[in-house]
Length: 366
Image (cartoon, rainbow, N blue to C red; front, side, top):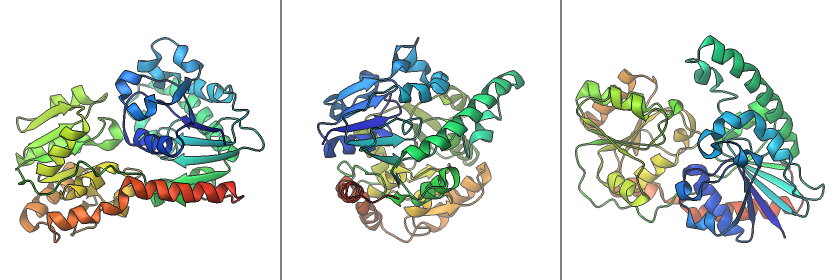
């Protein structure tokens, strides 16, 4: 069975790329198609073993850095891919990936991390800071992307969502049902036996919707130590906001991140995520999670037991959660918090996906 895997872009290793690595393990002979590929920045030996092909977007000027600027060309680029001869097509969707044209007899299964956030539910948040001229240019382009994105959903035979939250958004955006398979979490580096130190932790890309600014400003206000691990377009702005108790480490290898999970007082998770791998990683190391009470965190964090939810997405909302944790703590021990994370290990993901793919190949559609 010839298999093609379509992934939106391969320029760094985040949650979507970790899912892709597990799909690569399931289909070691699969060909990978993507818009742009930067092997050095990606740093994935698993993906490097596969034949990776790029769309014409990769041949545009400075594509590895400016790929998001070429978003309006990506639908055409996907439709230009020749997937004749492939029996199974797996699209990994968070940016444009699912809109490929497949052979009539091929099965197209889409693992959806998220409908494109910037085109749908986070559209107004993304354009809020744009100038009038930029907004006048971007608005019609994203209108076109929404039309194409909704239409291309009909090309998918089966949708798999990475959380119940995303399944709800698939239903809202595409009017399609989906099955839920939570993404894999690598627990091999997790340990919960180290002494806790007096610092809070933020881990993630420094982009608007993750709201690292709330973590920085809450720790500024309370005078608490905060370690920020991650990089992205907001790093410079966040550094300018940071007080003397906040430090930035940039992007770090998995072992360094795991060491901070194992020693931090708690992980701060102030943005609504589709699923959120970092809270599970933190809990696997025995760290409680202070999370906004929305999105995928509701499916992993247990309020009062493995972490605390705050409902108001504001500096004061997060600051109050920090004060509550310091006053009351959580009911589970570090060992019990770590045990709570075990069901999300990678083996469970591979088993669930194998089962669903076999079911879909047998003729099911959802």
